[in-house]
Every structure is written in C-alpha cells, then in structure tokens.
Length: 238
Image 1: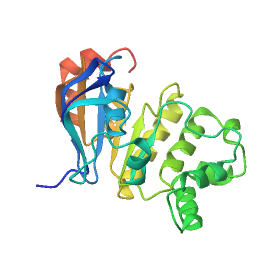
Image 2: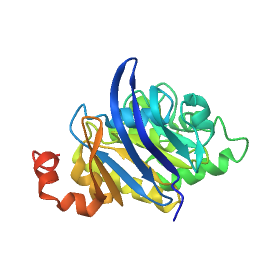
Image 3: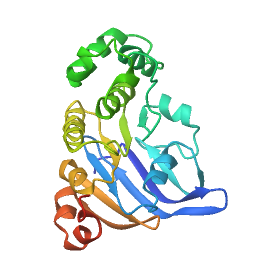
Image 4: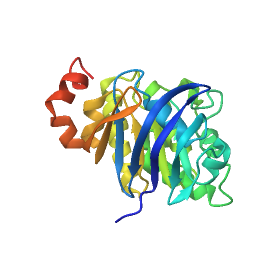
C-alpha cells in the first residue's frame, strides 16, 4: 500500500467545546488531487484547519508522511512542508507579485531566484505582471499569486480553501487548469471547493462532508456521476 502524504484519522475536533468534526477520516496519496465538497456548514474548511493545528482536536490524529503532527502549531506545520492558501487575505496587496512570491519563500534557504522562474513558467500571467502590486490584479490573478506564493517552498502537499470562490467562470477554469499543472509537478493537492462539479472533474478522489462527517467517498468521476450527490450539490450552477 502507498503511504498517504496526509491522513486524518478518526478526527473529533472543533472550537472550544463545540465539536464540528465527528470521527472524520480522509487521506491524500502522492500525486493525487482530492476534493472536499459538501453543503455550507458541513465542516469542509474546519477539516483543513485541523491539519494546521488551528482548532481543538479531542480525538484522532493528523499524519504527514506517517509522522504524527496532531496539534502542531501552524508555523511548524508550514515548515514541515504543508502549504496552505486560505480563502481570503491570502496576498500582500501593497507588495508586487514578485515581492509576494519572495515572502512565500521564507523557509527556503537558497534557490529563490530559480524557484521564482519556475513559478513564472507555471503561472504565465504572473510573469508579465511580476512588478505590479498584487492588489491591482483581478481576483483570479490574485488567487494565482496566492498559489504561487504557497509553492515557493518545497511543498509536500498544497491545501486550497475555496480557490475559485467569487471568480468568473473563465478564471475558475484557469484555476482548475493550474491545479492540474501543479499536480504534474509532483505536488499533491487537497482542495475545499463550492464549485463541486468542476472540482470533482479535476480530482482523483473526493469526500462529501455533511454535518462534520464523511457521507460519501469515491473517485472524482464516480462522485460527479452519482445521482444523489448531483441532486445535493451539482444542481443550481455549483
């Protein structure tokens, strides 16, 4: 069996005394894109935050390449190679694109210039805008800056929280295309996404969360074709 890059094992977690995740288990293998979908309030972002040590885990464990990292502080988690792009406030709006990417390289001891060039190849839009303030870019381009900034370190896995929220269909498509390109560079991805149909379309596997627990799991294509899931999430333009 392949050892997962990231696994959440029977997690019970929440904020203070409020338990949001109930016995949640999921994993991401090398070279996989895994989507977490589900209705609002299902605990999707909470599941991601549990990896970053941002909430109170009462039972279960989080493992990175077999190492138990449960309750590790967020800064240490990032130093271990988990790159995280939050949904909002994910770029320094007053800094240029290039400066944002350099800020992302804070744990990288050397090779920053080479890594910048690799990011400009992966995100061609950013290459031509490298000297513009990130705050002057469109929402979609800003999201690309956030993703590139997160990838400036040697990421073992990339966590994306609602990367296409509020974006036009054109940029949604571009972001999902870029996510596939990131996977091709060898970085597995865990994505929380409201646009369930598109997310499942690029994902190897998916988890459907309802009320903080796994309701369904399967391949991206299998979940997208499941009539019950289609009724729950894939109608109404999502």
